Amino acid sequence: MIVLLNSSKTLDFDATVAISKHTVPEFLEESALLVEQLRTLSAPAFSKLMGVSEKLAELNVARYANWQTAAAPANAKPALLAFKGDIYSGIESAAYADKDFDFAQQHVRILSGLYGILRPLDLIQPYRLEMAAKLPTAEGKNLYSFWGNRITASLKALLRQEQSGVMVNLCSGEYFKAIQADELEATVITPAFREFRDGTYRFVTIYAKKARGLMCNYIIQNKLERIEDLKSFDSEGYQYNQKISSDREWLFTRKDSKRASN
Image (cartoon, rainbow, N blue to C red; front, side, top):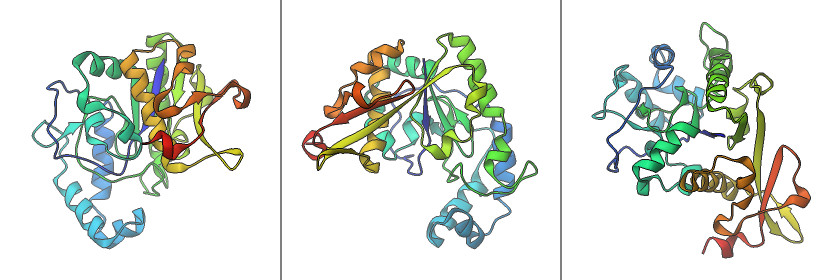
């Protein structure tokens, strides 16, 4: 099965990288086109586009000014080790052995506004560009138009090669919209995570994001390849809840998120 994550806004380019292997992103030429467009923006224009502070806009304008098509370990970092948002807090990549990275490289893909789609060991440079950004390009008014069916075609080829015909969607809705899911010729399972509070199961954003990372981590560390094995996921108190699950949306619930996180 193929596991799909999305990139995060938070990055870490300071921590030491524990693996020497690295690969090159599939759509690096397309990324360069986006960078060329982004370089035309002033800090105030970038701030407006991304809805960020002036200070953060200035940082990213400088990042794009220094961005290079030919990335190397000196100025870039493997994607799985560079992203550090809520999802990635559940992924213990700093402790991975080579066999864990090898499995992740085969089975995990990360969607990115700037890079389109990434393997865990693809080198990326610091950037800020969410998939929903309304950045006009020659392809249209936003990044969904820019990426078109490129990401879908890449995933479709990967699924044919991998042969399971199953994708585990751990992406946010913003990023999954970049895929034409009905063209994948695959079964897409979307795990969802709920907390039991006040007599009902509730969606809590911060816990759900981390749980998506926990599930990805569980798949990598246990080398899962059969979708049914995913129902054994039990990190931080979550359990598969068959009663409220459907064929394509699998619910994982726990009784007390505060207790489970201690």
